[in-house]
Length: 266
Image (tube, rainbow, N blue to C red; front, side):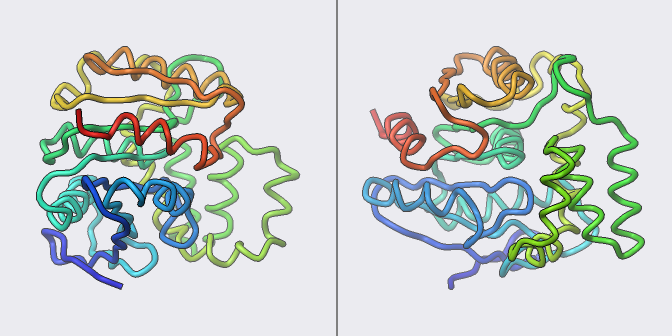
C-alpha cells in the first residue's frame, strides 16, 4: 500500500483507485480503510474519478504523532490532496464531514466540497453533548478502558439504544473498535463544540469558497437533519439534498450518483 508523509512527519497510508478527476474521501469516527462506508463509495466512483481513501492518523496503517491537534489532521488532508496532484474534490462523511469542511475553510486547495451528515447538534431535538462528555471519554481512555470509551461514544455520542450497545461487545468487530478508541477524542475536537444544541456560528466556514453540497438521509433522526439544513444555510451558495429512505448508514449505490453529478467538471 502506498504511503505519504504529513507536515509533522506522520506517515499516512492511502489507496488510489480509478481514473479521472481527483477525489479525496474522508472517514468519520473509528473508520479506516477496510472498515468504512468510503470503501464502497470509492468502488462506485472509481469508473469516473481517481479516488483517494486514506487512514486518518491513529488508524490502520497511519501513524499517530503526538500531541494531537485538529491542525495536524488538516495537514493530513493537505498531504493526500498533494498526492492527488495538488487539487482535488473533497468528500467527508459524519465527523469526517466536519474535518473536510475545516480543511477547505483553512485553505486546502479543493475545487468542490461535499459532506454527508456531519453530526452537528444545533437545537433541542436531542440531548446535546457538553464538556462532560469529552471529559468522561478522556478519563476512560486514560484509565485503560477503551471498551468503555467506545460504549460511551455509541450510547451518548451516537445515541444508540442501550441494549444494542451492550450487544456490541459480542460482535467480531469489537476488538477493532477498541483498537481505535484512542482516536475518539480527535473527532470530538474536530466537532469544535458544534454538538452543544446551539446554532452554528454565522460565517464559521467563511474560508470555504468552493461550491459545496450538503446531503442527508430522509430517514435520519430529526436532530441530524436539522444540523445539515443549518449547515447548508451557513455555507454561501451551498446545495442541500435529501436522499429518500436513507439513514446515517447511507447506501453507497444511492449516494455515489449524487456525488458523481456534483464532482463532475462542468
